Image (cartoon, rainbow, N blue to C red):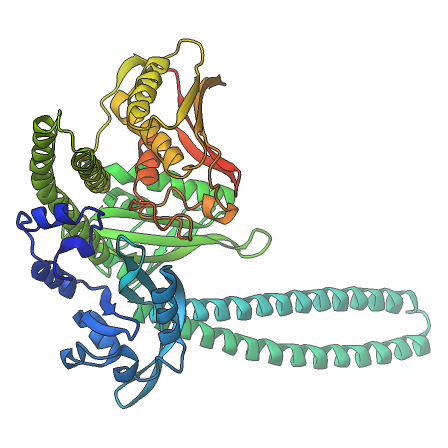
Length: 582
């Protein structure tokens, strides 16, 4: 960890050496930033898992101080060996594969005894240019409160279902009793002329009534017990919600009447004693999210789907901007008490602020790296011109590889900058009219110059003029072609097809390479997601290319997806509307 090569691996050692002295941020500064992170972070070296770095959050989880830096993890943190975490880390070290898990229980020694906590964590192997592990990056987030809250919610739902079932049985018994009583009265009326017969029937009816009353008393006792259990469950749920500092809400589907907790009113900037309606709360949602939130609520009510949104609000009285996350669903029965749309709201402003800091950090570092890389590329190009007629093929080959590596790093940094711009909402579409076949042909021509070993076949459509951002769509096609070449090293043919389909333009890029497992397909377009296996571990990249493609296509109101069969290749498709919007 002597220089930034721990963050950006490259095969060209002398390039790393040249740029070390140009970075504005030192390793010490980067580690200081990690220390301030709320996410627990640690770095281990060697198969013995020597603790090279741990921030305050991780030390708090372990119940340790900084005196353990430089020691073996399994020796200084009690219980990790017995629970299998040390074996997992060693397996990550030896295999080079990343291990990720969620909602995992762990017993940690705190306050003089072992206590159970729940975590989401990642063990990520950091590999050198030979593919060998030189460090493990460990990040963890405690989710114990979330696990406890959901367990209480599940318990509450189970008890409520049982009570509803018992109430239904009671109603059926009441109906049957009334039916039998009516029949008894009918028989008494029919036999009214015969006094003796009437007395007999009355006696039987009284006996039956006593039995019914005894049964009703028994049922009432059971209902009372169920009601007490339900009240206890409700109390536990309220305690969990208060502990998590959630706001609660319930909307009558028919009347749209809102019942809001004090905490919810506080999150929307209202006073605790103030009466608020659903529209009052929607009015506090900032303008860029208001229509979306309103439509999502109506859709969830109409279709009975779950509801999970994050948006900003401006407090009614305090005018404070907050990030909120609302989670809800439909409950109740139309035939009885009615339908209600209910859920919880939580303040995620701190989480969003930390995400913004992380994005700002990525943006700053990327900008700082751009300047020395641009200079370095200039030096390499000057050297290539100087040595243009040089007979030493080894030296010119080294310069060619150096230029290629600098270009790769420049491309990765540009990707980070684009991700940061997307997250900040600062990447805009510059739409213009252009002919799609011409654009794709130009990109294929450029890619073929640098990858002459591959043959790219293009099947164009009829002449189509799009109104879109030409450069960004070109970036999508370029990225899909580059991936096809990277992940199909032994297949020399790439197929590109362009077609019209129901008013949409369909572009497909097909290779005959490694292929992708079905369970990986849905996650391909997730930010920073990379397929980790023996075949792909030597392929460079940070998992942001397809994420950027998906964001660009989404902003064109289009769709992107992949089809693949492992070992036989993949086809990536995207569609965008052809018609220019009014």
